[in-house]
Image (cartoon, rainbow, N blue to C red; front, side, top):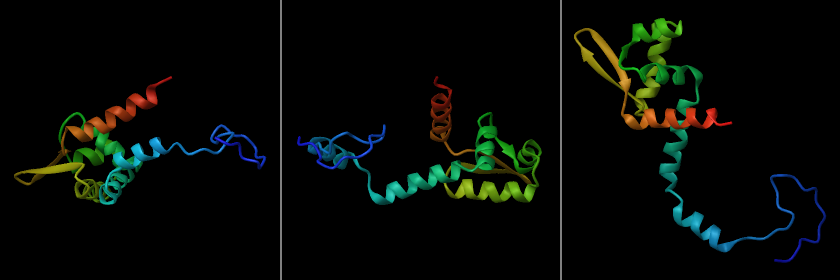
Length: 126
């Protein structure tokens, strides 16, 4: 581990010396996921990153709701809510169930709830 001869400002995000730990790089490469899966995961977080869609997901934690219910909760038009629900459904974050003329939405599975729960625990840490 030789020191870098060039002087540079030390910041909390950088090392004082330049060294590559090949075993750690190899481990990270071995644990890396496929590019397609990486894209899908990034899209999931991007979809959930929109405040309106996240509010919908949070509302659905308590059980299924129809578009009218969600629109009333959010104070938005049913059209705006339908647009957001379409994005959530396309990303497999919510699913729908028809009961007569009413279409109910719910979280697609427990994994969606897990994503929200872990995120909440993270932000609640001191």
